[in-house]
Length: 163
Image 1 (cartoon, rainbow, N blue to C red):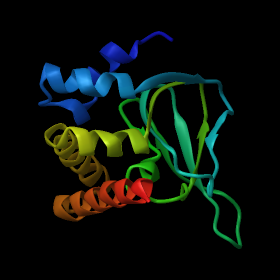
Image 2 (image 1 turned 45 degrees about the horizontal axis):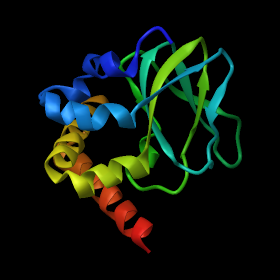
Image 3 (image 1 turned 90 degrees about the vertical axis):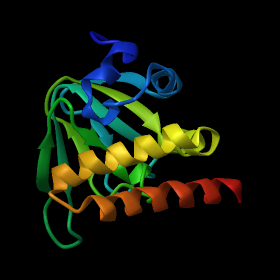
C-alpha cells in the first residue's frame, strides 16, 4: 500500500484538532486495505461492520429499490467516507459500495469506535463531533441532528455489545 495508516489519517479533515496523544489512540484502529476495480466492498443489506476512509481511487455507492434497477447515488473520491451505517448503529448497510478503479481505504470496525468512546470519552466525543461536522457538510445538513444520530448509534451499539 502506497500510504501507511500512520501518515494517512492526517490527510482527513475528520482528524483536524486531535492531539498527538489522541492520534496515538486512533491510528491502530484504522487498517489499510486495497481493492481492485470492480471489487464490491459491501452489498446493500450486508451486516454493517466497517467504516472506511478513502485514501485514493473511487467508489460508487449504489442503491437498489425493491422494484427497480440499481441507482448510482454518488461516487466517493479521496478524502471521502463510506460505510457510515457501521458508525451510526445500523445493523446493515443501506447501499452497496463498488470500486470503479483501484482504491486504497482505511477500515475501522464500528465496534472499535464504540469501545474507544467507552474507554476514552474525550477522544470519542471529539471524533463523533468532528464526524458530525464532516457528514453535515457533505449532506448540507444540520450539525446538531447529525451529531445526535452519531451519538445515538455509538451509544446504542455499546449497549447492544454489552447484552
